[in-house]
Length: 409
Image (cartoon, rainbow, N blue to C red; front, top):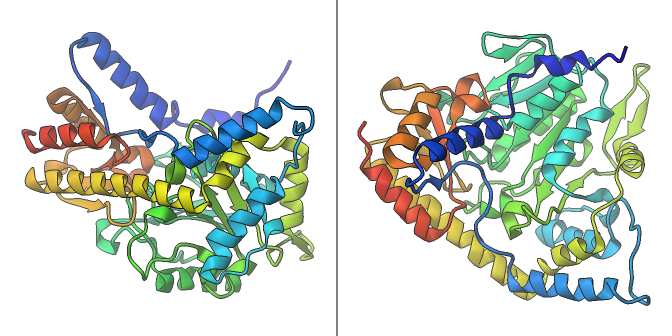
């Protein structure tokens, strides 16, 4: 008899966005004439920019010639892309990150999900609530929690992000081995300042904790006091791993490319207290379980860093930022309280009259034919809130905004 990993049975139903897709599909089947607009799942609407497309085409032609064909590439990524990332995303900001501290992957979701494999099963995990579901679910799968009860798992240190604390998590009162932080935040849109991150780095240094820092949306930051990278904080290279993605920055949701930074100064400890380099351990994991991102895709990602690529993706980011403002204005006109949208492509709104998140989902779908994401799907502290995204086209975003202003609250 083959036994399953029983920790999977602790997971709550299906993945959040699969549930949303099922509900929308059922609504469309029942209302075939309805024109449903999605401001829910965070997929992008704008195509790849010309600089990236040109690089993809050129690389495709290379693959058809014996002299320029590429087979298996390095699991950690080709040097040309790692060096471009190090130079443009870090060294240009006076952050000392080297190319061999960067690991190219097929998505930040994959890396965030997989990175917890490097830590002991009894590690204490702290994460924000509300939170991107992958952080929590992968630790449930790994057996770091007890059963789900009253909206939460046991053994997890939850860091409430509420309206009262401006959706910025406070330090835990107890020790945490692994700390997940996301800034700019998905789902709340909150972005942590350098002063706020300094507090977290100090905690991690004192406790010998590891911060898993998801900065997939850093390109949307507009305020100078907000950190683009946790490595802007002195000492962070000793305690933090950073995850970034080309998905929401350059439209790679369908082509899949991201990277993770693991500084060589970052150490993790065994039960005897001996230190081990996390960079070497992640390299060992990747060379065993990952065959690398295709050459063609990496050439496309490299083109993001050309002058043409930078100018072109900036136009797309500005478009999404403008979408966020359109949504915010509509929500305020409708009399709703909303947050985010300033340094992030997400708007976090308070449901009217204390309405439950899923009830508001149904109301929005039935009254306005607009899809969003119920806040409770991100955690207990998300109940009574709702997430909208700015990733649709300007035309459909405008239409959705007009419908929002006509909501019957």
